[in-house]
Length: 295
Ligand code: ADP
Ligand code: MG
Image 1: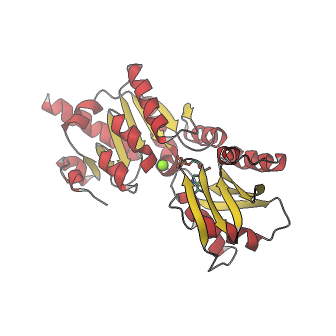
Image 2: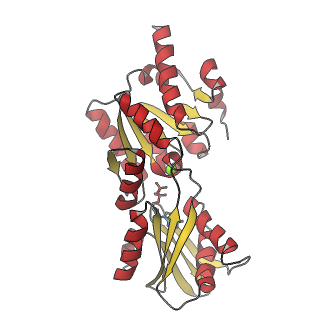
Image 3: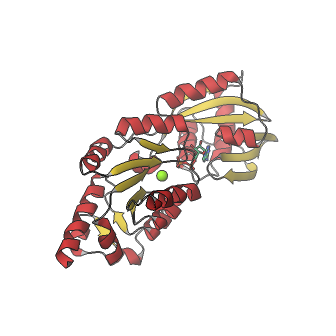
């Protein structure tokens, strides 16, 4: 999707797939000294797949994924798509029951009623919100998955946690190279994510980012940017999701991943059309050069 506002980019950048939407971005970019990255879909490829399913009951995998697919098919979240795909490909499922009372909890997960069964799928916070006990084996599975940098999701049926699904979303091949270039340029690098602390730490370590804010809601991501600005930093925010748009809007320079959501693209100052993180460096370079030329 390419909103019309994007089309007023500068010529040189546009030919390289870096759309700069106006003078303010150019003016701010030359003094940037901090880059904040979203995790999912920005540092990672954003095409998650299910890698392990741990069942805590005698329920069959097919029965389990019937409930999971019937619930998650109603969600737009990339994690939901991964679970539905897994149900189709590995549990050999084409159809599943109709969901009633589907509800989605931003940053937490989803709930629905399937054939009279109450299904709840999401993180620890979601289970706590509904007063579900989390058995220690479930915590063990959760920790094991998160230690590998995977996102782990709990599945509860009628108030009891029945399984843990581990989902992997590998980091983009260029991510650690780009982070090391930015650090060499003297920029501070951070990661903000809605995912768990443990998963976030593992991914941050993998790409070489030293500062991590996890379990962050959209407004908290924006709050973090304001905090950095109060410390005197000039901040680039790189993100792809609807949940990144408040942070993209308050940053000195908002950079949206081209493959990201329309809302992120709309509020950003710069759009990286190739969705390649190397273009974060290109965009900063280009803006600095055109700023020097204007001056
Ligand atoms: P991210 O920044 O990783 O996109 P979100 O704020 O979208 O984070 O989600 C945070 C967490 O909420 C996820 O890591 C997951 O545990 C849970 N979650 C969100 N949506 C769903 C869903 N549709 N099904 C299961 N869990 C979900
Ligand atoms: Mg994202």
